[in-house]
Length: 223
Ligand code: PGA
Image (cartoon, rainbow, N blue to C red; front, side):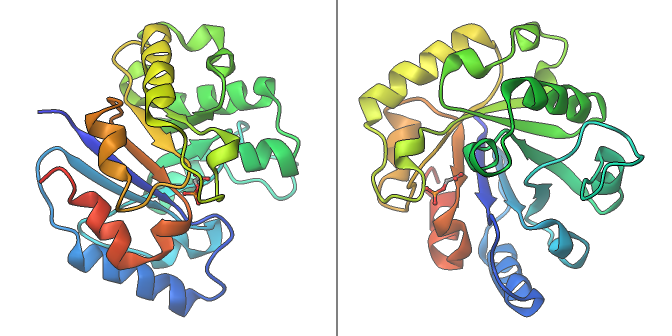
């Protein structure tokens, strides 16, 4: 059976721990555990230690590539693991834009997070952003690629399903046996098409991941 990944990226939301707990607990209570479904929430770092739920795995939105040392503001792989993170998003286009992350930095992060055993969701817009050294199978067990066209992120304008399908096939040629997710204005109405018509293995979801009922509904589309 095909495994489906539904990953929520909360970005810099919500404002308070109370609200973070409310959203997380609501998803965790309503999402039904089932074989072949992996539900993940990636909150801001500060909330991570306070969120626990049986049916939802924890992830982070970024991670530095050094283990420790004089790197003000950074968080390491081991720090994330200590607080129960199993997943990490790397190379999100908003980090490329606001933090000036380059393909080179992102590649270092991917290697460090994979080496540390974190399931790593590498976000790309172009297939050339998959580092040449990630092609082999040695890392593939924990690597996932998320196709996130910038024009579709947070705009309410999801990417054309046919064009997304072409991109999905291109990515699969480059990194075999790696789950490929789609991200960009996913909602409960359009989600199914990206899996059934375009062949993705799941989603990376921003805005709607903060709306528990809709996020839960997306988890149930293939039931
Ligand atoms: P969106 O964000 O679902 O709000 O478009 C997706 C993302 O940035 O991962």
